[in-house]
Structures are given as C-alpha cells and as structure tokens.
Image (cartoon, rainbow, N blue to C red; front, top):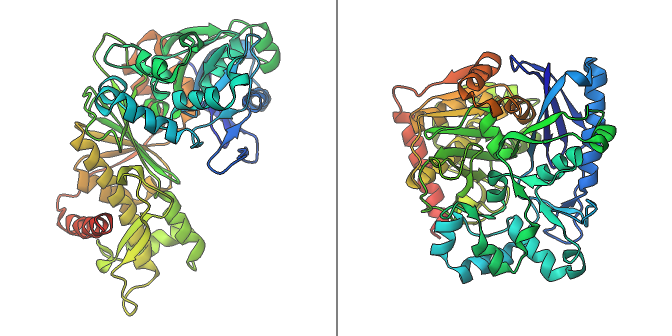
Length: 494
C-alpha cells in the first residue's frame, strides 16, 4: 500500500510515492519537464493559472503510475504541500475566477503596510503575530479595490493547496496553519481574524471551513478520480504550506528544533511555544502544522535569506572553474577566515532580515597580491554561513531556544566548510537528511493516527545522511565571524 505526496511549487509540481507502512520512497516525478512560467503583466506582479497546477498534478500522477507499475487501488492516502501565500478565487460552480496571485507578487505591499499602521503595531503583533504585509489577505483586498467585478463573483478564497484538494474532492476547506500564512488567523482569540477582515471590508463567508491538518479532510470524488486517475474515496489526509511542510519533512515539530534549507535562497524555520514578536519586522510567524487551538502553542518562526546559494552559483558561473566540487577543493586549501577576506553575500535584492535594505554583494579586504580563487570560494561559503548565523541571532533575540538544526541534503549543507562553520558558531549539531517536500507530504498522510514518534523513526531510518557537530575550538571561526559582522554593520549603519 502507498501514500501519494503532491508538492505544488511555483517552478514545478513534484509527486512522490512512498510505502505507507515503512515510509520508504518508491519514486518521485516532476511536471512539467521544463520550469513553469509566471505571468508578470506589470513590474512586481506574479501570477499562475490554478488550472495549470491541476493539469500537471493529473499528468504527474499518470506518469508515476505508469513508471512504477502500481495499482491506484493500492494508493490509500494523499498529502499535499504547496507554495505559500498564494490567492485562488472560485465562483459557486468551482471555476477559478482569475489567475492565482502567487507568493512573490508584491502588488499588495502598500495595502498591507497601511493596514499595519492603521490597525496599529501592537494589535497586529499580539493578534496576528505579523504585519498584514504582502500576504494573502492583503492580496484579496487588492482584488476588491481593483477588480470589483471579479470580487462580486467570489464564492470562496483559497490557498493553492486548498484548490488542489478541492479539485480532487469537490470539497472546499482549509487549515489553521494555512489561514495563518494568509494572515487570516487571530492567535490571541484562536479564531478567524475578524480584526483584519473587518478592516479590509472582506466577507467572512469567503473563508472555507476549517479542518485539522492531520485528518480525513475529504475524499476523492468521481470528477477528481476521472481527471486524476485515482480511485473514488481515496482520502486526503494532510495539507500544509511548503515551509511548515519542509520542517515536518525534517521531523521538526517541537520547541528547540530548527529546519533549514540552503538553496538559491536560504530559510531558517524554528518551532517555538513563545509568542514573542520582538522581531516581527524581520521574522514571520505562522501556526505550525501541529498547532491546535486551545492546546500548547506551536509557532513556526520563518526567516528568509535571499543571498544564499545564488551567491555560490554566481561564483561558479564567473570564475574559471568547472564545478562546485572544484570550488570546494580550492576552498579547503584556504584557512578558516579566508586570510582576512569578508564576503557580504546579499546580492539577490533587499533582505528582510536587514530591515529590507539592499546592500548587495561586497568583497572586503581583498589583497591583489595574496588572494586567489580559493580565497573567494572559501569567503563565499563562510559569508553565506555567517548570514545564517546572523539570522539565528535575530531569532534567538525573539525568544527562540535551539538544541538541533536539521537540513536537507542540498548544495550548501553538503559543504563541510559551510555546515561546520554554522554548527560551530551556533553551538549545536546540524543533522543532514536526504528527502524532499513531496516525500514528506506523502509520509504525513500517516499522521492522522497521531504517532509522531513512528513518523520521526521513518525519517531517521530512510533519510539520515550525517551530522556536522561544533568544533571544540571555535576561536578562528568566531574571529572571522566578528570581522564579517563588523563589516556588515558598517554598511548597515551608513
């Protein structure tokens, strides 16, 4: 028997099949084969067609079934992960009224900032744990202001994962975790956020019914089965946004546990029971997948670092080197601290953790007589590592207490220099796991049974790669970080 995991990204749809009892990955397919496009009618806009997501889900399921020669009757549950903060609107017939305004669309920034000012920082922080900012609720307000003819036809608003669940089942519902990522949840009252809905003049009945994150949320109906090839009655058992789902995929559920990713950009996602919003201008707060109203709080604090893997990739493309392996070999020949070079790796736009300043990439203390490619490679890895450490300091000032970081087996965390630098400076282990969000979503279909211990064992048994532990002598690392941090703060304080 198998569980199916759907990961609805903005560049592709990934579909995973896992053994329902052992959690072992059977296979993963990606649709389409080339990257999905985004439509940008104006600068700062980003839209995608929800029907395209559904079409790729269906073709991906068909591809998976054919490739691995399985019977659809053996698929006994579905889990869904999806790109966060998107807005999908349907009418009473279930038709999408417009393209989805997705996570990276910035048209509603001013609307959200004005709401923060007008409602007041204290009320937003204590009730919503965030500024309304450019989240889903603000995007819905933009539609009301700018597309009243579409707004008048809305039956329900949904997040991207809600839409895919609806296409499978014909049932419209959502989760508390999903509502919180759209800033539709009032954490102080543990209910839908009337404070923001009333301020924006939105209709509360547009919000779907709420179901538990881990539950029989709905079942595949005849139309969903006809389109997808799945069996009628197959239950949808889990749904979450991509960052909470990534944390779940790495077995991060409890205070003290942190999930990290080091792709083009970096993300640090820490679970806490602390409702501190001291750093709400730099850190986002969402209901984690195991948040339950009325029970001990589980908040996921999310910090994004734009200047991460993209910095190392830029060097690969612009130095006379053939591969990351060659860069890592060169970097390993250079001592800790890169002989004094400090590389500030923020060349991928404004950084929220730097209060939305755009400081760019800067190479400091370069000596043209002594420094070469290896120094630049090591300085880049260290600079990106230092940016993660800087982010962790922000999170710890916001009430996070940490005992372990878990990360996917991606390019940055595979680097011994990068991972050892981070582990040594933050003072706790970094555990590396080889898994994906689609696999995590598939495995989470078992969690409606409530056995989190068995779920964690599944991840350890199937995905564990290695652990990077802090070095006993952190002097050289600390000196290099202090130099880097001083250079960054000189830039920030100009």
